[in-house]
Length: 97
Image (cartoon, rainbow, N blue to C red; front, side, top):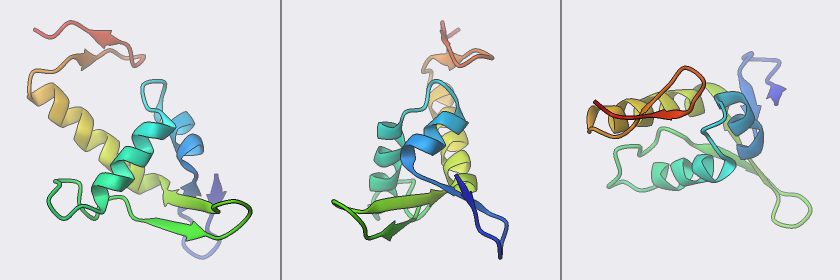
């Protein structure tokens, strides 16, 4: 994770963000949210923009931690409201009521 010295906001790669957001969030899930964020038809549209930095191979895309945490909270709330499995205090799935 890196901190922008001008704004104080933290940025990270999908793997870094997943490690910070908890054991039930993966780098692939972050990439899925980013893909959905680019789709105007999706409820997550515009919520997880990234900054692509060219480099070796295909480069690296960085995302803001606060944006990823917001999307994670929204998707967690939506799943639980729709009757999906609730997550316990350590991230494990618990039976839905």
